[in-house]
Image 1 (tube, rainbow, N blue to C red):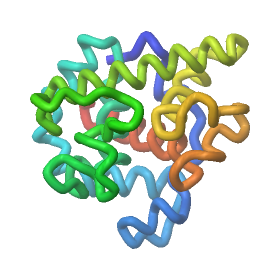
Image 2: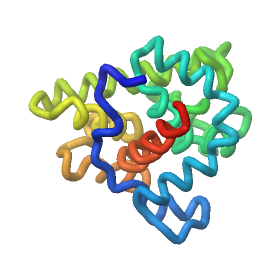
Image 3: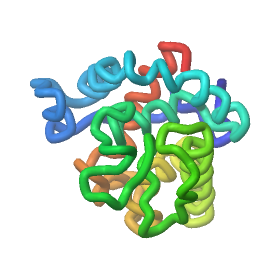
Image 4: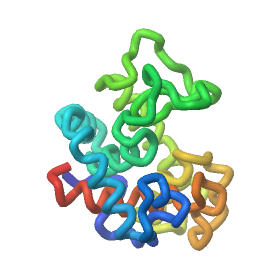
Length: 187
């Protein structure tokens, strides 16, 4: 399913940094490392696939992008402690930060409701990037929104340095490369 926010397959990407690739002790970096990281998460991701596709359809968001964010943020839930990150600020598969967003205590960390809320947050960032950079293409705004999902709209200052202030300095590039791989797996 395509997204009204752009075609993930048309977005340029450099993939994962060496730092991100080291999570899985990979000696490669770039797009190949991103693909391998996503592949390492695929078995865990499968239990969420139907929810991801359902939310993607409902929100007109490419399910591959949702899967890629889940892979990047929590390794498909593998690094969570009762749904929380190691710092205790972020919650759920897609890591909603309680310092910036309201969390419903009744919503499970691995639920459709959580994925929906996080996808709505992503969409709001894409729209904010479009307002901030009206001359950017739809795909540039899509990638900028992915970067902002990690580090905030204020950290995106140019397309050339889109990940300068993201985790690993590769967040949107790594997510885009993972999404392109998840697309080949039916997401």
